Image 1 (cartoon, rainbow, N blue to C red):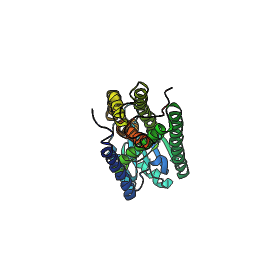
Image 2 (cartoon, rainbow, N blue to C red; image 1 turned 90 degrees about the vertical axis):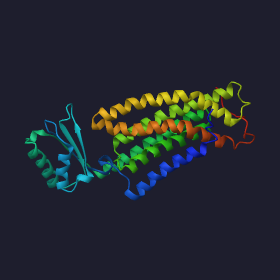
Image 3 (cartoon, one colour; image 1 turned 45 degrees about the vertical axis):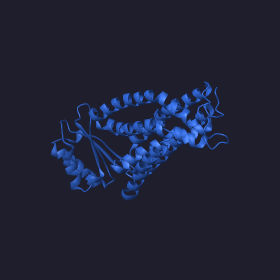
Image 4 (cartoon, rainbow, N blue to C red; image 1 turned 120 degrees about the vertical axis):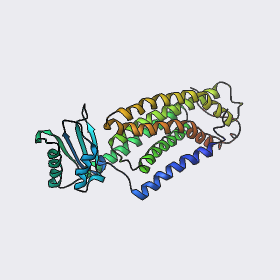
Length: 301
């Protein structure tokens, strides 16, 4: 049986390295917020045929906004282009639209939408996104505290924060813009990760309830993780296969949602096994009389 608790420092260091790398990348490059959060312009045009994103970027580069823009293909046949770019004067935005219409010999009725996202709206979205994560975390902490005990709840929330930071670190390291799809994926990851963690915590409680109190605390936790390992891995792999397929064959809008899910679900499975339970163990063993034996005040109902 693998000693998950005994090797905990190794896993803590691995997580710390990834998170610190994300923090350093943010300090160097700044936060990579997308148009949804910073404000800007969204242009949607029906090209009416297949096209290359590089051609659209060439037009954007002509006005020095290519590096600050995101181009994606949309529609049933990917004949529509959606351009998300920084805020710009009306005249410059119109010039970009005119160049695209001219390049593909289109009329003005090919323009499907031109919308501006103001910086005030972007700031409000950031606040709402943060509030949604905080409310979800607090609600889960309350549930776990009632269902198990508050130490389990705190350990689970720490693991959730770990998953969010790891996912953000990947975005920061690869300079991927954070948009509204990222926030939706974060909330999905919170629900997925907490479910996996609760399964392990529930097995720990069952083992305590079923007469295994004579086990050392480390042995009991290692046994509980081992018993649920197959379930955790199979659930994560099944979900990852599906989402990975969507990422590679789905449209750009799906990829924006699938990428953080892939990272978050992988991190969620990792933290449920290697982070949450060791954190609970470290806190639990500080209780009087709880060092190497599994004396516990867990609720069993």
